[in-house]
Length: 292
Image (cartoon, rainbow, N blue to C red; front, top):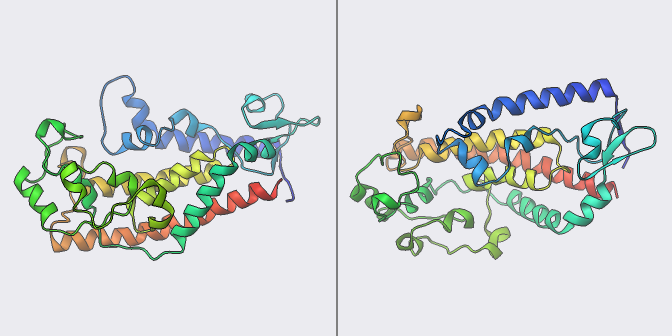
């Protein structure tokens, strides 16, 4: 693979743009830090995916990119980077791939399998309802926010629908009473077999795979995936049984025909956008491997 050299003036400008964008996207999370305040939409992206605002703020150019005259910068001492005699700094692709090769192979297989499948848009976000099914009020995860419907009406929504959740990391949070109501019983080992692009959680997980492969993933792609994950999470919670009107989030009433149409329409758009990111992430994996 032919290396790309970026002048000091140019990469400093790109890095500054990235830092500004990252700070804008994480402003809410950083403002809540230390206050004890919680946000059921935004906090999920940091607590479940376990990637801090500080890590998002670090700009990585990706494999095969040489940053000229960067030897005196802090990034020259970051893990996974090499400094050349001429002052150029670049990723240690050989070392990173040696350590991440197994993970890269899994992510490649999962992304490609998901891309190869059509999007299923008939689940209507019922995974969130299955997570509160027949729970006592004090057991509900986001207990600071009321349910839109009464407990019995919430249970009725679950019982009157067919639940078709294919995503293991959503399914594993179902209540014990809801598990058997799912049409399949997904496992971690079947993830590559089950993943499909219409799934909101699979769409959010593109962000997970992007940051898991950092610093091999170009940071622009990681932030694009983060931004999409945030949009998807908003729909995920608007379609949930929770009343989030206090946060300015109007419900998508998936228990109604109109709500189902709204949800499925948004799913199709998110499937297209997440697939575009999957293709870019596959390209970054290929680029890293070709640099060996």
